[in-house]
Amino acid sequence: MNYISKYVEKIIEGSKKGKIAALIRFVLLLLSVIYAQLAKFRSFLYQKNILKKKEAQVPVISIGNITTGGTGKTPFADFLATELKADYKIAIISRGYGAAKEVEEPFLIKDPKNLYAGAAQAGDELFMLARKSENLIFIRSANRYQGTKLAVAQGADLVLLDDGFQHYQLKRKLDIVIIDAENPFSNRKVLPAGLLREPFTALKRADLFLLNRSENVDFSRVNELKNSLNKFNPQNKGVFRAETQLESCVSVASQTEEKIDFLKEKKVFAFSGIGSPEAFQKSIEAAGAKLVSYKIFKDHYNYQKEDLLTLLDQYSASQADLILTTEKDAVKLFDFAEIIGELPFYYLPISLKIEAKKELLEIVKTKIKNGESK
Image 1 (cartoon, one colour):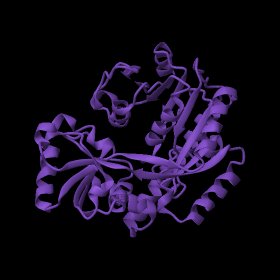
Image 2 (cartoon, one colour):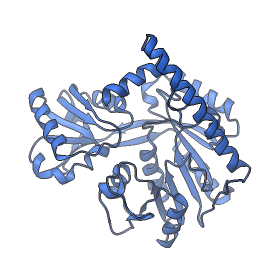
Image 3 (cartoon, one colour):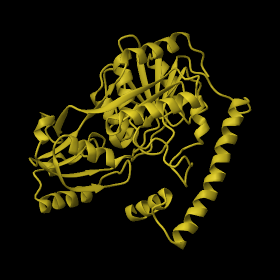
């Protein structure tokens, strides 16, 4: 499956040549045109109020992106909730990507005191936040409007939608779009000929932009992106720059925390099942570790006991000093603590460093209090 995925990626980016690649590229482009028109038509129906939007009883902020793959939505949701929870009782609502079990929605994952579900019920990213966050409400609900009803019943007075940009049905005070500064818009084509989840023109709906992973590109490139977004969407309230930060390295089994310098010069066997595996690789290398082998799984991969045993065998054969994964992957491995035992098995938590943080938060707070829901 990984081979097919990589092959299609090469076709999309144009590096794969030949008649077969050209034929597949043509079919993908045709499907992309159809998909784009359907997306535009759906947007039109909501704009003209043919399809009705619903309004929650409390302010809603959407955090999303326009491309497939990981751009840092969840770390930003974590940042925003942490910064605002002194002033608001916040509920984070997600559809629960990566969940292995069906639940009756909306489903309460955590209230300010108790955690009611694991990764299998919550989804990897939602559980990752819920297990380490205090005084927040977490809800899994594909129907975000129904999720807000449960949030209000739990006492929330502010809702954050994790991955809500394409969820037109629910009105919101603010649309924040996270963009990967390294690969912001793929080839500007929608699925399946590119990585856009909807046509590029959708960015005109955004109120704020965050250029994440900007540490991996030249400053001039960041300014170029800022200028491009401001020109395309002159009504936006700001384009902000963010960097991914590594602060520690945590043992999967014992939760013992080491400083990030712990990885320096260490030989690492790594694996991940995330939307941007390349970003994880760069994080490992930025920490000064030597990557001897890296196994990539599909995004939100649900690891089974057999997968873990295979990975441990491969780690042993690699003669690496330790095995390393992401926090998003690690939360699905806690049930295998006995198998992991005393092995040097760690994960990397990440956070965001945001330029002009106070300015960004002031814009958000103003929109919560005075902005109109749209």
